[in-house]
Structures are given as C-alpha cells and as structure tokens.
Image 1 (cartoon, rainbow, N blue to C red):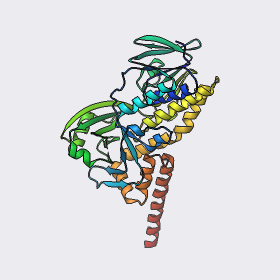
Image 2: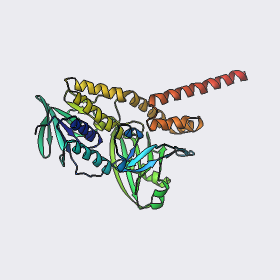
Image 3: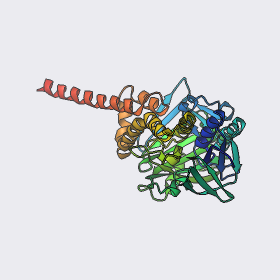
Image 4: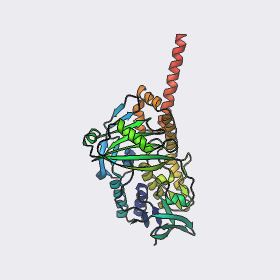
Length: 380
C-alpha cells in the first residue's frame, strides 16, 4: 500500500493528525483496533481550549457547563457560576466518531478492526504489523496510548501512571436533572487525585482519579464517593483506564520517523487528568511538522511540542503536588483569598496558564507574610 504516513490509533490525536495530513495532500492510513462507534472510558468533559483549536464539534455537545462546585471532605463547598461556558460535555463514542469521519472525508483511509501489534524502523521508513496484515510507510504517528504497541515496540521507559474509574449512572432521573449545566470536583477523597460528577444528555458520568502508587482498590473510593453524593440509585456501568503523567522534559519523538501524540507522548494534564485537548493539539502539530517536510521534521515537532506544552505542564505538576499533598489547606486557601477561585477556574478552562497562576499564589503568600510581619512590628 503506497502511503506517506501511517497513524496507529483513531482517537482524537490520531484523527486530528490524519485530517490535517490528508488536507495537505498526503496519503494517510489509520489503523484502528475497534469498530466505531465504540465505547470509550472517559469523563467526556471538554475544556473550552478544545474549541480554540478551530474544531466544530457543536453537533455532539450534550451539555454546556456554566456552574462548578468544588468540594473537599469536611469543608463547605465552593460554588462558582459563570456567564460563559466553563466546559462542554460529550460522549466519547460520538465525539471520536465525528473526528474520524472528518478524517475520512478529508481523504484519509481508515481500517477499522486492525490492532497494531508491533512497529519498527526499516530502511527508508517504518513497518507496522497488525493482527490483519503488515504495512509500510515513510512515517508513523503513534496515537495508540501510553501503553500501546508503538510505545512498547520502541522500548520507551514506562511512564508514571494515574488510574481513573468512571461510573455511568442511568435511570437516576432526579439526580441527573439536578446536575444539568453544572459539575462537581471533589478534592481530598482520593489520594493524589479527585472525584467528579459530570452530566451528559441522558446520564451522569461519575468517577475518581488518583496516582497508581497511592490508591488501593479504586472501586472502593468510587463507591464511597457515590454514597456521599447520594448517587447510589439507578444502574451503573463502570470502566477504568490508565493516564500517563508527563515527563519533566517532553520527548514525543522516537527517531526521525516515529512521532508520538496524546497519551502515547505522555501529554496529559497531571493536575486534572485532561488529555483530549493535548491529544488534538499534538496531532495537529505532528501533521504540521510532517507537512512542512524536510529531514528535520522530527526535531521541528519536538520543538513545537515543547513550546506549546512543556512550561505549562511543569506548572501543572507543581500545582498538583501542592494541592494533592494538602487538599484541605489548599481548599481553605482558595475560599479565603479574594480572586483565588476566579484565577483557579481560569486555569482549568485555559484562560490563565499554570505558571501565571503559581506566580499569583506566590505573590499572595508573600503579601500575606508581609502583612503578618507588619502586624507583629506594630504590636511591638
């Protein structure tokens, strides 16, 4: 098969890369292990940052979030209301199908039900072995996840992993109606993580996320959270998935011919666990670097990724360490300081960078310390 690039995985990152490459006139083959539409374990909460990429996904948006409730065990909840969207809720089976359909419309060829087993570099290109055939191309985009075949084939160091578990609640009509247009983020109930309630058109996505080395029996944290929220009625479908923590120095390239996007590249927000935005944008950046051509496309892609994400993901790692190590103290600090919750929400929706938020935190702590010192001096 005569193709310019193979994309392993048809999720958001792979679909975005395939669309842009096909639009640029390259012959693209996508190998996707599932038959679409397929169920995908995910909370389905899109940041407004996703829409900033120029994607039209309005037809699959099931709820627009304009209210967020932040909670922590033993603390009074904080409710934040906005006049502009804080998030958009989608079902991944519809969202992912939309993106992959558009890649096909642009000219990409998609083979469904082809599971990638192994990949390797060969003279002049790459060879990708699936359970239904072997394919060759000059380039490979690995979009098959942190534990996918692309990462395994090239012996990338295993990333640190967070674990997430989602319970889809259906049949709880009263509870579902109460959460339309708003979300709950609950800190402190899961070690180094959080719990959530997200509404979709006909059910609730509820779930928990925590660092793998810190949580034991994630299902137990989920059940206790649902009991605290009085969400035990109705039927539920439970699924789980791993999330990679990003490395301090991002390395999304394997040699000159293999580029990684999304989870495969470790591009996940270490504080929120959000991966869809990073998958989409990294897929677009990979396609941009390839379409520009030249022998330095891998270095170009690496630089694009570092410029786009590295500083902010480092800031997210620092904020995660701060809040997850002292969730009660952090929660009370947010409630106590004027403007803190506004700035915090601005970070979550992409209006303010993590680095800028941390500078605000540092300035606030310094100012508080200075005022305290001044008070001691005046007493003296």
